[in-house]
Length: 446
Length: 49
Image (tube, rainbow over all chains, first blue to last red; front, top):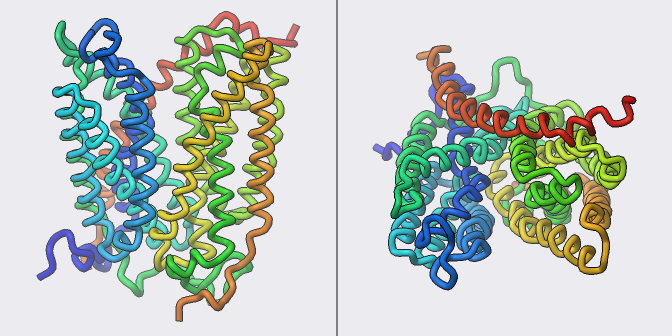
């Protein structure tokens, strides 16, 4: 008899409701999406010894902490998703979710031990290394499963799954703050204990998802759904395996589409707080509220835009992201010129919603072009674009604005040229998107 | 054929909706200073006379 985790044991019996799968997907993504809220630990980790203030030469610095946790975690996410994608397709979602839970949560435990030892290498090994592998597995497993359950609404399905990742910061950040407040003492910042409690909670949540998740039987289809017998222009009825997909120009065009969309969005997201303060002179507290608002739009955009793509088609919705995004980026300097925080907030919220939408729509776009057989593995390889963009976007905004200030440009106007560059990057993404054509049938699996 | 009960589906959604709602509440609460900020308040009515 196959083990509880085996793919064969997860094939749904007749009568199983596919609506049990979205909560499983959201649960896993919500847990691993905690990385988006990791910044709440940055300052406490730099005071692990000094407690009330950082001790020079003994306490860690913010750049070191960010590199060991957030940056390494995202790089490992991309690598594990790219290299383990085919394994995920083979073993199924339950074993993958369980493995993701083991990696992500044991990573937190190791990181907690690293904080106890005050050894940044152990923290990096735990959160960034082992935890990062859990991140990658947890990110791709629910997506390919949902795409198979919702052939009639693939955009909505991927939107639901990836919305969960966007919500990770909304839950993880306040959860971390509350726990640190609870465990903080005169001799501890409370991070060590917080990591352990988070590991336990996330382990329960992710295994709840692994328990309820199912894959559809091979001949299953939704009630009343008639699968297209003839391919539409950009929706194939054929299947392309991951290795073959990498030989097509469509794979690299979609990689470029994602990279441009994410570079532009993440540049704003990562620098939202200082940008808001520099451009409008608002306080850090107000800017913090602005970041929270962006998180909500980032999450909502994932579901709404991706669901809309089921009606408009994937290519059309990406044209909207790029053309509207370009126009909105170009308007941000105008909002600063007329000193309208309201206009700035409205523009950036729509931009960030499309950033989230771009993330959520890409698996459905891949499914349209390459079929469902190895969509998880192909998705895993495409999201390496995210790792590149995660470095490129924030660096562009930070360095260009610093360069402008160094050359005498007023602080409030230092972001203008960067924003125009972001608009240009979106235009490159638009060109990539417009070049997407159906995959040549010679790449189809026999 | 054993059909999944709607109660099970609702319960599964509740398990994820509870932490999500809690996080959403915190984010909205934290974003309120953005709307009560004096400069921002003025800016909201910029051009409205």
